[in-house]
Amino acid sequence: MYYRLSYLVVTLMIFSLEVLIATVWSHHHFIRAYGGDFLVVILIYTAWKVVWNSEPYRLAWGVLVFAVLVELAQYLNIADHLQLGADSVARVVVGTSFSWLDILMYALGCLAIYVVDKRFYRAGAYV
Image 1 (cartoon, helix red, strand yellow):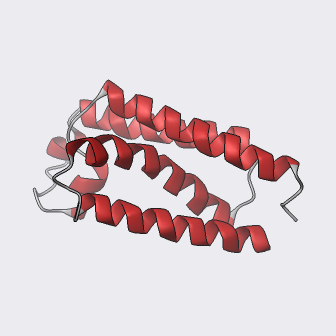
Image 2 (cartoon, rainbow, N blue to C red):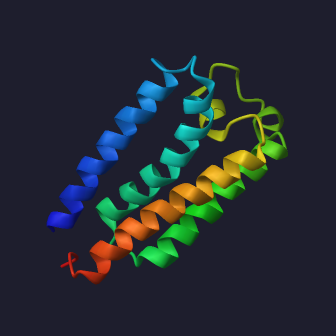
């Protein structure tokens, strides 16, 4: 049960960082474009772990596949096809610009959280 609380704390911290990146540090292109993408997959991973105890390898791959599908939706201009308003939260979540570097950052974020989580998983921190 303690691991869930730990993941909740980490999730809230990363969410706070993402908000800061989107607002306060929005003028720092590198941080917004790449740091945010690196962190968002970790955010999804840790949020999942708050509710479900999943094996790290499968979860990391699942989050990566999800992130790549969202990036593919950007490539296909789904936000425009769904006629999402310019200021809509859905448009921000789906995104509007495809980038191979985004996929690289998603992969690096998934790899990083997998390596960290695998250590906890093997150490028997999950009860």
